[in-house]
Length: 296
Image 1 (tube, rainbow, N blue to C red):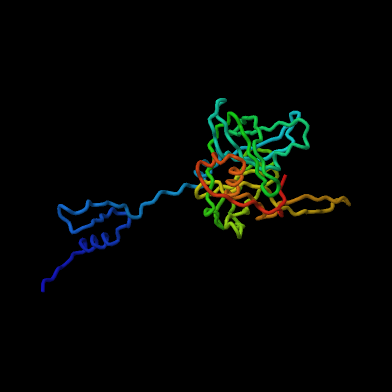
Image 2: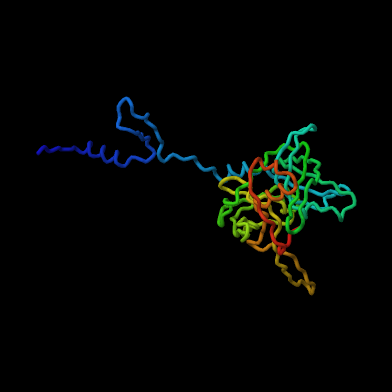
C-alpha cells in the first residue's frame, strides 16, 4: 500500500478549495469529448443583479409624479395628485397624459376654473395647462385622464395583476394639502379579488396619506412599477370639548387608504380609447364596488 503524507500548508490549501464560493466559473459539456464534441458553455454560478437601495428606487419613482390644482380667480379651489402614464408626439409638440381621480377634477361647482399640472424641482415649480380628456363614474371608476401639452416627464410602468401581493413594500408619492410632492411608506395591507374575473378590484395600504393625496401613485419599492392610484381613505370623527365649546375633525384611519389597482387603470384606458398608452400590455380589471368614500 502506498501512503501519502500531507504537510499543514497542503492540507490548508485543500480545505480552501473545498470551501470556495459558489460564484466560481464552471464549465458544462455535452458528448464524450474529442473533436466532434459540443462546445464548452461557461456559466457564472451564483451571479445576480444587485438590488437598488431605497433611495435609488425613490429617485426613479419621483419623476413620474405631479400635483394638480383647480384654480379660479387666481386661487386654488381644489388640489390633488397625479401620475404620468404616457407620452405622445403631436403636431403641436410633446404631450403627456396624467392619471388622477375623477372626483378631483369635478368643476360643476366652479364658475370659471382652470386646471393646472405642477412639477416641483427643488425650489422651483413649473405650471402646465391641462385638459380633462376622459373620466370614469364615481365611485365605481374614480379615475380621470388629463392631457398636458409641453410636459415631458417619464411615464410610470404599470405592474401586472400577479405583482400585487400582501405585505409588499410600497411608497406612496402624492401632494397632500397642495404642498410639494411628499412620500410615505408602508405595505400592501389588502388585495381584494373579484370572484368571477379573478382580477384585483381594490387594494389598500397602511401608508399614511392626507387631504389632497387623491390621485397619487402607489409604487413597488422592489420594481418601481405603479401598483395602484390612490382613490381616498376612510376617516374617523374625533370630538372634544374646550371651554364649553365642542370641536370635531376627521382623522384618516390607519390601513384604510384604498386605491384603484393597475388592472383597473388598464380597463379604464381601454374603455376610454387610450389603450395605446399601455404600450401593448394586456389585461383588464373590474371596477371597485361603491361602498368606499373618496377623500376630497
